[in-house]
Length: 176
Image 1: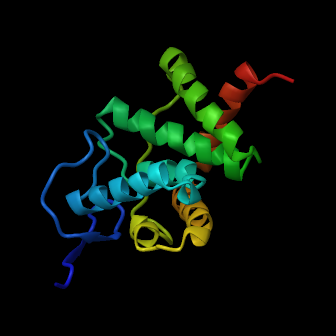
Image 2: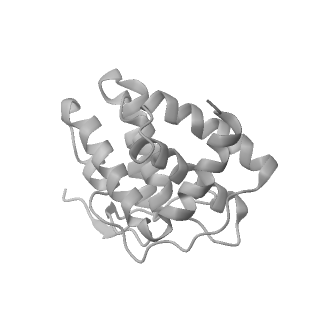
């Protein structure tokens, strides 16, 4: 039986043509969201794939921004963008970027630094389909990293704003 695909309306990925549920505030086609859950399952159950998890979550979240009127969606995009900024621009390793993501979320609850950002018209490079379609464990991390890089750079018009959010947090919490 041949698989039926559509393009996800949010990220543009080749996605399974399914009916079903989606995330509560990340906007995606049901098939795209199902592929994301499949990748997460693989990362949780097969240690060879787990290393890419940080990039998987960040890349998917910023390629599926929710409504600008939904503060949970706005915060999610901001938190994941700051996480990728810390990895790609500030030079933190994955463990530190993951820690920063958690702490920045708490910081934002108190200081409300994240503001709505208009999403890109389209996303560059890789999508969840490229990760989902890969069954070679040795390639998973590099694909996830490239996907996260591509997704982050799709938001380049907002990089100064993202940097300012990160710097406010880092200055307040990681003074040297």
